[in-house]
Picture 1 (cartoon, one colour):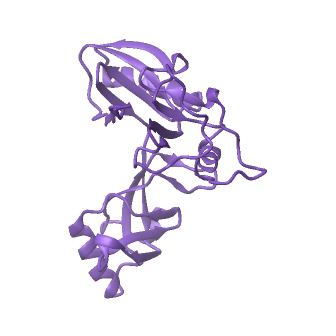
Picture 2: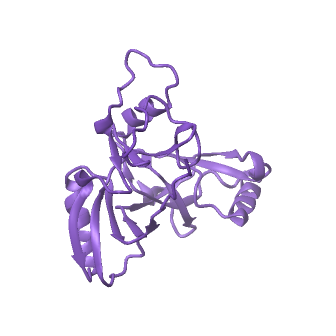
Length: 232
């Protein structure tokens, strides 16, 4: 059995599009690819407790069980526990070919306003976002928001980032993505000099959790123009 070709969508650039685009709903789940050794994540890590692949079933799926937290618990638990959420075939949503449950019409020559309007409707139904498809060209569209807030702590990186900044902590959680190698070197020097904690950073995230923490945070830039109390 040959390995499936995995189509990774690109992020929307905020501009209008030309042509006819199929709209599909984006679940806040876990991507699962069936390979000869079983279901694997996009990062080629084994996923657990999924029903075995059957002939005719899509080999590229999104797993979604109740919510993101339950989905992670279900797919990462090696040995089933009493409270481990069950994964049944109905929790697997085919991406190629697309599961009919995710199909949400089409857009022709959509403007940015058209795309954002569809995104808002999908978010109102508790979907993570939408994916616009034209052949093999897939574009993911998700909401995002930005926050300016002070750094409360930091940690050294591991592996190739040893001796550099790994991540910073904030009142809304840790932020480790988005830093360039140059950023990590400069900010680690600031940390060693005792000047990093208290500096304000701009962070973008998909949304905040019910507890006020970041979902999928990404560092954007330092904000030396911002005072600590201005982020309150």
